[in-house]
Image (tube, rainbow, N blue to C red; front, side, top):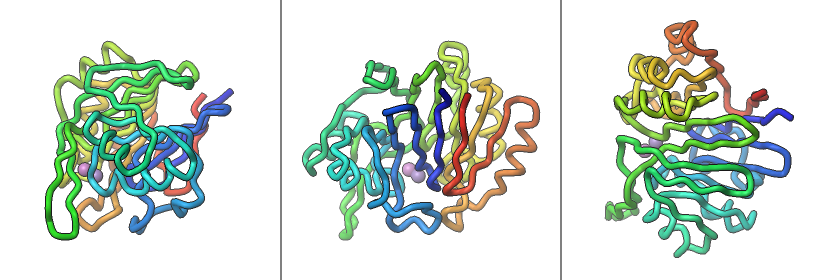
Length: 230
Ligand code: NI
Ligand code: MN
């Protein structure tokens, strides 16, 4: 049976396979591109790459409403636990077998903090990417990151079938660096995320697709669109 990858906008997407419903970085409330209100989302696991508001987003209310478990780097997971969510905390380089499959945390070159209305910065540990093995396929969600050479290692060791990469530039890789990431990761399929949500990350995903060319199948999803991975 095929796994459904559903894109909700920005870095938020779901992987749905049979009874399993994994949700990543659910930034919906306040996201001008959000495909669906947070109150309509179902999930049994919520995976968070880092604590910035455009990723942590609605994770805690969704997790508590759905009785879902948040999977996140240790400090961010504890932050969510203190706010009422069920958590599974992890560290970069560590893997764990969940009922749906295996999750491994990878490094990401970025920040991870929550900043309140007074400007107080609360650091939430290291940001991460995720390698998720589900239904015989490996997904690499890079999270927010700049380009790094160990994507070559990730490509060689874990052979991702699908890579989910930011292309927005300014905060993360832009198009050209994301193309370099594809060269190292060698995925069968690549999905660009983290663009066009805000003025500073306006990018043309079709320019990315063109530059990826024959390196991988590039699937450009509009918020609300789904894709069957088979
Ligand atoms: Ni971020
Ligand atoms: Mn971000």
